[in-house]
Amino acid sequence: MKIFDTLSRKYKTIKNPQANIYSCGPTIYDYIHIGNARPILLTDTLIKFLEFKKVKVNFLQNITDIDDKIISKSLETNTPEIELTNFFKKAYLKNLKELKVRMPNQIVCISDEIKLMQSFIDNLIINQSAYETKSGIYFNINKFKSEYGKLSNIKVDDLISKTAEDFFEDKNLKADFSLWKTTNVGLNWDFHKQKGRPGWHTECVTLIDNYFNHETIDIHIGGIDLQFPHHENERIQFLAKNNKELSYIWMHNGHLTVDNVKMSKSLNNTTHLKDFIQTYGVNVLRWLFQTTHYKQPINITDDLLKQGVKFEDKINNCIKKLKQWLIINEAKVEEQVDEHILNKFDKYMNDDLNTPQVLMLINFLISNINKEDNFKIKILQFNTLKIILQVLGFSFEFNLNVDDQIKMLYLKQKEHILNKEFVEADQIRAILIKEGLL
Ligand SMILES: Nc1ncnc2c1ncn2[C@@H]1O[C@H](COP(=O)(O)OP(=O)(O)OP(=O)(O)O)[C@@H](O)[C@H]1O
Ligand SMILES: [Zn+2]
Image 1 (cartoon, helix red, strand yellow):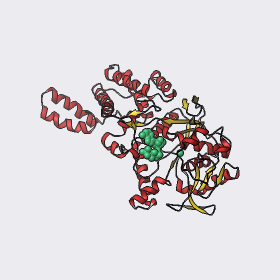
Image 2 (cartoon, rainbow, N blue to C red):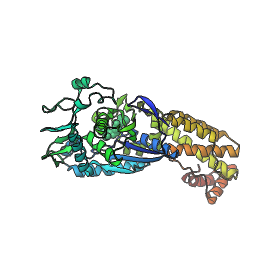
Image 3 (cartoon, rainbow, N blue to C red):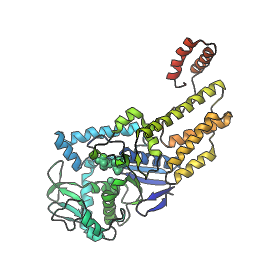
Image 4 (cartoon, rainbow, N blue to C red):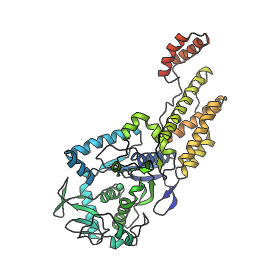
């Protein structure tokens, strides 16, 4: 499969029978919003497709439960950090369940691996890629001037004038980022005779380094806003410690926007995922993300959401009609699939997850199924549609088998309608709606 790699700015191919994948998880100081769900569902679609292709996936995700934003929220709301992060961790895991994602093989909270981070940092100090000052421990960018900035196409000299990293007098270079912050505010640990906590970039890279045995992973995923400084800083630390690339492919998703502005907590323009799911359901969200190539931004509008609801209705109606058709024609469901269409699906997905093209294929299949009279072709196409929808993570009532009693009721209801016995027909109608046949 071909995927665009942000580092080389080229398409790269995933060929191995096994893939190690890391996706930056959320910082848990609030409910996640639907923008945050974009990298989650991108990772899910990618993994479901790779597994469909029989690739064995090992997927690791972190949960950032040590962070400045968490400390601020804890102070603001007068809630202990641990209470706060426990609450939002539970909410996050519930979100993953509701999204019906392929769960990570491991989910690791940063606070459970502080020792690992300390030993990772010690490694960098020993090989002079990091240095200690009063305010903390910093990465020594001077040592990697030719490598640093490659992922985000930034030159170190430009960075020094632009960087937003806090400027501490005791850093060698303004752009040197912190691996460990000396502080006694918020949760902290003893390290090098000072109290402090790890920096965010070190949190992620340490997990990757440890859980994937210091080897280059296959795919690293995250939103485009993380490309710099977060991913740049992850990459350079891994390179400094292991003298290898962190990831073979860096995959970045575009933003979900509102009025063409990034959906973001700090801008107060978010819709919490839990609220979206309650109003629209997960299928509409998956559809929304698949309408556009994952690298492109998506601007969310009421009109777009209406189209998503229509898409879901269209599939539900197709399934209902097919069930009715099977009853009337006393036909049995068969297993065959349309290999030609599946090959097309494969081709589009192999092409850097071209989901917009796959959605067109789905629409084509639905209209074919609806108008097809030939029993074999109709079922063949439905089976193919079902596989495609499942790989894309959609949930529908795919089982076409109908209980004998419900079949009889359906036939009876048709008879009542024919005889103009509308009261009786309506009574049965309510049952049939409940059973998903009407
Ligand atoms: N509007 C968005 N569209 C797509 N992806 C997003 C959006 N906002 C955040 N992400 C992604 O969600 C993931 C989790 O990020 P993180 O927890 O750092 O979010 P965040 O930066 O706190 O969100 P916010 O920007 O709202 O403060 C990251 O991969 C990030 O790139
Ligand atoms: Zn990360």
